[in-house]
Structure formats: C-alpha cells, structure tokens
Image (cartoon, rainbow, N blue to C red; front, side, top):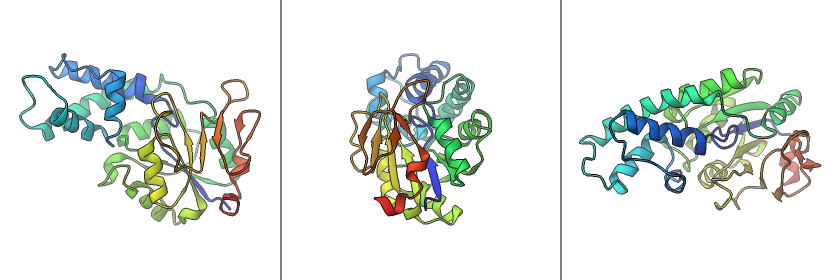
Amino acid sequence: MLQAVLFDQDGVIIDTERHGHRVAFNLAFQELGYPEVVWDEDLYHTLLQVGGGKERIRYYFENLYEGARSPEDIEEFAKEMHKVKTEIFVEMLQNLPLRPGVHRFMKELVEAGVKIGLCTTSNEKAAATVSGVILSDIPFCIVIAGDMVKQKKPDPEIYDMALEKLGISAEHTLVVEDSHIGVTAAKQAGCFVLATYNDYTKQEDLSAADFIVSCLGDPDGEKAVIDKAAFPISENGIVKASYFLELPGQV
C-alpha cells in the first residue's frame, strides 16, 4: 500500500514562480541598488534550471550579468539578496492561490491514512508559511526546506532524507513534482512520481514521471488533463487519491 506522498512546494502547491518568486527577486534587486536587473519570464525560466534561490543569484552574476558593477563578493551578496527577497516573498505568499485540487487531494490522502510531507528547495520560512499557515489543517509529517540539505534538486538528497526520517521505502512513496529537475531528483531516489506541470514547466521533459497531468483538478474549478498514466487516476477531470493507494502493485 501507498504509505507517503511527498509534495514539492513551488509550482505544485502554489504557482509561485511567475508571480511570486520572480517578482520578489526583482523587488529585492531594486532595494539593494541593482534596478537595472530585471528577470523577465523567459530569463527566469532559464534560471529555474538551477536549483535554489541563492544558487540562481550566483549563477546569474557569474554567467549572465552584463552590468558594470558586479558584486565584489558574490557569495555574501547572494546571502543578503536572498534574505531580502525572502522577506518580500513571504509577505506575498499568503495572497497567492493554491493550485487546483491540491488541498482536496491532500485531504483525501489524510483520510486514507497516508503520510504527507513537504520537500522544497525554498527556504524554511516560506515552507513554514505554506505548511503551518496556508495549509494549517493538513498534518504534515515532515517538512524539509532547501537550506536543510547540502545538494539541491536534481540531486535526490532531499527525498532520500525524507524517506530516511519517515522510515518508509521509496517503493511505497509517491512524489508530486512539477519540473524536470524535481522529477529527476524523485526518480533517482527510487520513488513513483506524479508530475503536475504549470505554464513554466509544461514544455520541460517530464517523461521520466510515472504520471503527468496539467493539475489535480477541482469539482467546481479547473479540470485535469491526463497526459500519461499507467492506469486510470481520475474521474471527470478530478485526480483522486484513492486510485494511488495500491500504487506499488499497479505500476
């Protein structure tokens, strides 16, 4: 039987990248004296291939920045910049809607006795806001944020850590991800993967996932488009947790 479902945060639970993280990064650049730096949507999608916010800042200044005054100490600037960006982002976070079907799907898992975890490259403060405030009625058994691991996705460390802490084997675990690097991390950890893509990631290679959907679907809202599934997982555009409960024996 399925024992645990581990959710990525950004792009899976909340579509935070386009109107959340990206905007917060740009506001932080302005606050720290780099108003000429504006990460548009295309550039930010490129930067999303680098796991972790501080890592994206370092990568940008080391590889893409064409201004005349790059920070003298990029490592320290990335830490300061990320701290400012996080404060801005957390203020924005509670005003961003959950993706279709996420809360319903989690509630179905809880009712079925399946453990729920959060595994995100985002920082601890943002993860705590999502798990403890926005989804305060969901009993997360584990929350692992980006700063708690040495290697970010696509490295499987975050999922390996979650499995070890929960005492659950990968073959009894489903991971819900939205990106190529997230799917890669989860598959390298040996888990089954349900990919729920968004506008940023729908063109990425998610083929390694066992299931691929546009969203999880809500009865009174957006319905799921099923792109890949080894067996039926939805009813009338609603991805149901009950179909995954015997997952190890079905795939």
